[in-house]
Image (tube, rainbow, N blue to C red; front, side):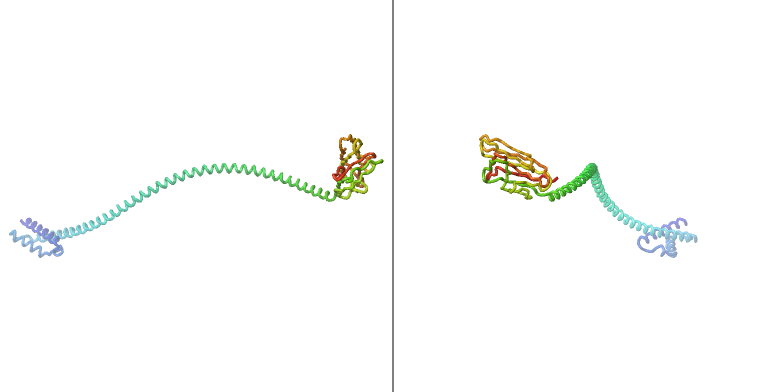
Length: 324
């Protein structure tokens, strides 16, 4: 009976303690030994039990302490539970944020994958362009090598041309020197040339003796080498001279003749018979080597005649070719 009463009292204490804790009443620290004793006494009266052993109080105290301890642990558990719920809420919040971040990262990853794909396409395009550039570079190198070879050949040709140019320049300089020498010689040599007409009077001759023809019409007489008074050309320097003459005769059935003399020597003669077919004409030329002071002149033989008028049918010409 005593154990049953103790067990009943313990149950009442637990029930009351739990009720008070849930309703916000007394805490475990507010329960006193007197209240427990009063409840136990009440149990004693209701159960009509008497003579309870004194050691039950110790057991009740122990049970009370255990109840208080369990109550405190329960409150601590509730606090931990609330704290865990708060932490769980925070974790859910963080999880939601993490999911948002994950979604954002997924979007960024998708964008990055697109960028990577674009970069791959650009890399492929650059590779193609690089291959094209390499091909063009190879072509350029071939062209450059060809140009180098052509340049080398051109340089060789330029060098050869420069050598030829130097030779030509040397020859030109020599030629210029020769030209200058010739100019000097030409400048130093006398100016000798003459061109003459015989007369405007018509027929000259025939005579009973040879006569020297005196050309009175002077067209040119450089160096004053011909004398119309004597009819002689006098060489001013030793050299080679060119002489020519033309003569006309309008008589018929006669001999026409003109002779050219060097000093007292006849060196050229022309004659021809006119058979009455028109004017008879004579012409001839030669080159003579003359010493300074030598004379050259034309002679009309006896019995012959020449004709001249304003048309200069009969003329005498000469000039210095070069000094000797």
